[in-house]
Length: 117
Length: 110
Image 1: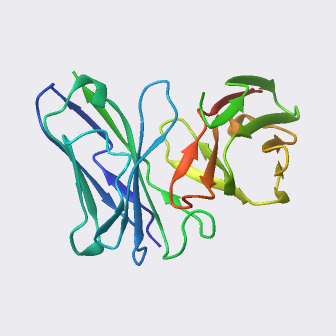
Image 2: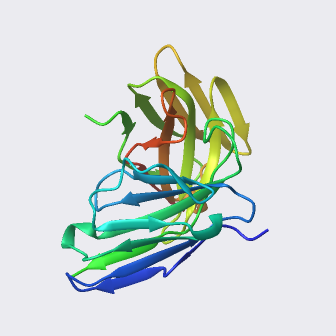
């Protein structure tokens, strides 16, 4: 079974540019999550999809961030325009349908390291 | 103050030593997770706990719900155990949103 795949693994962009991160969850996992770790801080929740619907996007920092999950399969996270403080590691995770972490395990991707210069 | 606190932040050990990493949390939880991240690698789930104790190989995780505290123990540590160990909880008011600690960086030397 393929795991959660994220790409690119690294991205270096200039301030003001646009970057799109992609996450391919495990096939059949309805729940898809985006998390972010900025330098020196703990990992923080960004948003949660159930199939193609946004269940919770309370962690999205501002309207420069746009997440989509077309057809309930892969998801993209676009940052436009990127700012210096957006630098960090963006993790994606997926889980089977259920009440969430509490009952079912998560599988994380390896993350995308984003550097905005 | 973060809702999930880990200690220590950094830990070095000699191969073979017994290691303990602690996690305290301040919210009601439905489950607590211990995760591992090797340098440059993804995050791997080690344990999911809601009570008591779990063991997998040389790893043992315990949780005390009344004290809101969990520990991760590594027996007979090995250099390949070197990684960041992260405690995370799913709160009882929102089981889908994980709250993470800052992690403990462990280095085990031969």
